[in-house]
Structures are given as C-alpha cells and as structure tokens.
Image (cartoon, rainbow, N blue to C red; front, top):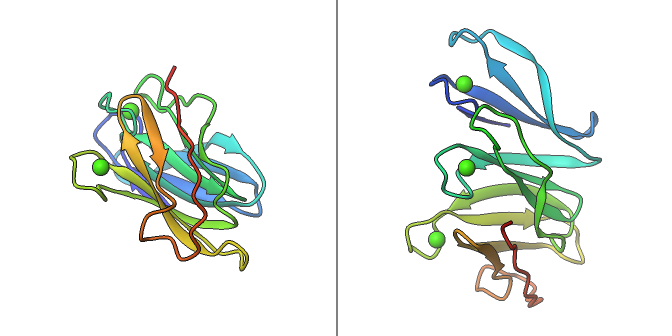
Length: 158
Ligand SMILES: [Ca+2]
Ligand SMILES: [Ca+2]
Ligand SMILES: [Ca+2]
C-alpha cells in the first residue's frame, strides 16, 4: 500500500498490492477529499506483494515499483495521468519478494531500488542502483546481501 499523486492533479491517490486479487492497482482520489474511483489495474499477476512509487525515469511523473513472486519491476506512468505501460523487470532473482522500496542508497542524487526477499533459500535484502536515465544496476553483491549471489542485470530503457 502506498499513496502518491499518480495523475498529476495535486491530490493523493492510493496504490495497492492485492495478493488474493492478483493485481497491482491504483485508485484515483477523485475530489481531493478522499472519494475514490474504481480500481485501475497496473499489473495483473499472482502473488502481488508490495508496491511503491517514485519517479523512476526522472521525467517528472510518478512511476510504480512492484514486487511479486521473485520479480522486482517498474511500470512507467506514460502520460503523467496514471496510464501505465507494460512492466519492465529490474530483477527476477528476488526470491519471494515481500517488500519493495526506493531510497538514494549510494548518495548520487537519484533514487535506487530496494527489495527484501523471504524465501529461506534466498532470504536477502538487495538494492539496485539507478543508472538513470539508462538502466538500473543490480547490486546484489553489496553489503546489504545476507546471502551473496552476485548477478549482473541491466535494465535498458527504450
Ligand atoms: Ca491525484
Ligand atoms: Ca516518471
Ligand atoms: Ca542513487
């Protein structure tokens, strides 16, 4: 669950990850006073666990970061109005991801991606460097990893 302005109308909307419902959705705050519209599906996927939002691609609108199964993905806010494109995978090795978050881990001024994973054979916290505007670099071999499993994944932007 997260709240941010997804459609750029200066009021806070709501994001939700629904495990049972199998989807990542957002609800528009239609009047700015907490009256919400119907669910708008961003991703339909089993085991949707966590959702967060920040401006991943630095174009001024809020994009959506999601975690499900072993995947950490982001969805681009295509038009700044809350219409989202197909998700783009940051990592597919986050075994049993149960939380995604973003913070400027390396202090270079852009937001990087964090995930925690619950499966016993892959339990870890990993972070992925935002190589904005071109890619997000998997830094699983960082000191955050409890079970180092170095991988190199890049996220090309189209
Ligand atoms: Ca809004
Ligand atoms: Ca954006
Ligand atoms: Ca950074």
